[in-house]
Image (cartoon, rainbow, N blue to C red; front, side, top):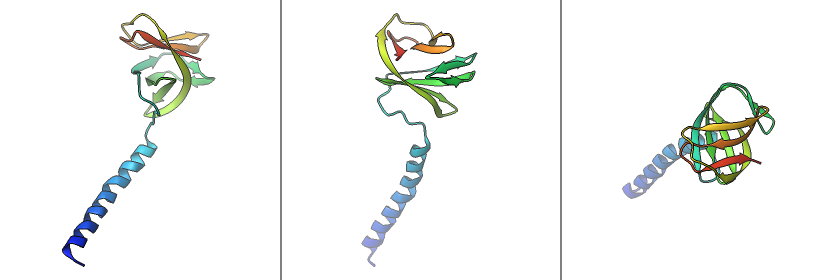
Length: 118
């Protein structure tokens, strides 16, 4: 083999060595499919329900896209729900609106729109 061919093989092997772990990490990570419009940290002090799934007390990252909200706990999506965006007043802190323990809306700090669960 020539030096040029050995160089190409080395570069290709290096590419695979770097790309395969990255692809595996992306497959196992929390994936949100659309562009993120809002996100925030929320603490649940009592059990709340979203789409019939009980969300236990704890610290959650909440990520909202154009049509979906995702609750992430320990880097895993634990529940998602369809949403619609509604104009609202800007709030000073992240807030969940619940009725009888069921999450109905999510207000993100500094945003003039809120995510309403449909």
